[in-house]
Image 1 (cartoon, rainbow over the protein chains, first blue to last red):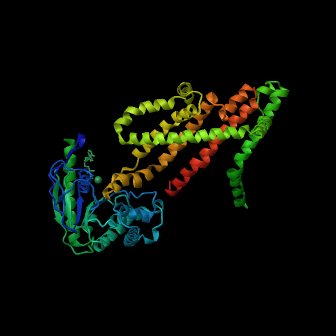
Image 2 (cartoon, rainbow over the protein chains, first blue to last red):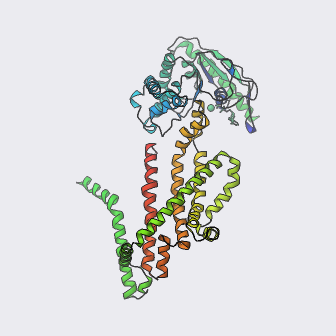
Length: 248
Length: 265
Ligand SMILES: Nc1ncnc2c1ncn2[C@@H]1O[C@H](COP(=O)(O)OP(=O)(O)O)[C@@H](O)[C@H]1O
Ligand SMILES: [Mg+2]
């Protein structure tokens, strides 16, 4: 599969070939501008590949669909709705009954620890609470695949750490396939079954690491640090190469 | 003690300052009238309005029923014309939002029409419709529909693209996208567009009435001129301004503020 934009962008992703298993937590890291968001947009169906195709359960992806829900760096909650109505938004779109909407919304608000804030308005939430509400809105959809594009990168470090641990717990509770784009190798290693590195020099997928460590993972542990070092070196080489490329 | 002083000061600024300013302004106006017309002889008394004479004129017009009738006619015309302008403005605005090409072609033309003072439509309207109610309504529509259309188009186009992406990733169809995301997201822009449209409509209505009506505020204004009654002229001008402000303040601003407050803006 490959993706090419018209104009200056040119070819962003060359020959990406990838199979993600059911129920897997898959992370994508790489230098900025390497096409991580592009890859997620392709999987979500917002963009179509210029070559090749993407299959979901054997069926080709031709557009967005609610079996794959995307989350963004910005929570993108609707400010004209309160928290619970935001969570019900997608349920209403797929035509759930009012009672079911109510029940599912409460269930997932509880999961992300926002059940006490269900009648709050969006502007009354902190950044971390907004992202949790967006997560509840996505999870409530009962989607097979959750696509997350740097969901924590707009938050402060402490909130990010808390949310990472919560995400690990939530994922254990609500078994979904998750594809996470992040610029933090640590975050990827903490959460994922596999971590993919995308190359900068329009090379596409560079390497996929399997993370065989028991959960909950210890960020300070020996194998964790070793694998982190290895991936960071890999990404760093990529950054250096891409910078050299720019100066050539 | 100090704190009390402070709150007293604040309440003076918050509630009393504005009314007191206008009372003082009116008193100064009356003084200028007295000094300017009798002591210094700068103006003839019939060429310079005074607050007391305006008030007298007001009472007399109310007693004759003229003011109420004029108000009623103007407001009904305003509602009809503005209502029609809203319908046309929204239809046109939605069409413009759907086609970037159409917008590129029509944008300069619509902006041009917007700079044309409404009074310039009056001769055309009279030739087209005759001296008729529909001529005035036409002037109101031409004065405000295009501004509404452009606001509606911009409101729809400026909806946060992430919100649209959220709706699409949840599998919404076109109708749900409009009903559940685009319309509520663009609502503040719509209200702002209507507010601006109303101010254009009200001005256009007065132009139309001054030129062609047989009853209405604009007509009463012209009657004042024909009677050489500067106090009646002044009175009607004040009424026109007050109605414009009241509707802006207590209809549009009210809706706008409550909506923005709900969204935390
Ligand atoms: N819609 C688009 N049209 C043209 N070029 C694009 C578009 N979206 C992204 N690009 C280009 O593709 C490259 C990868 O972008 P992106 O996937 O957002 O990178 P990342 O998320 O890894 O930082 C960038 O060089 C960007 O300029
Ligand atoms: Mg990105």
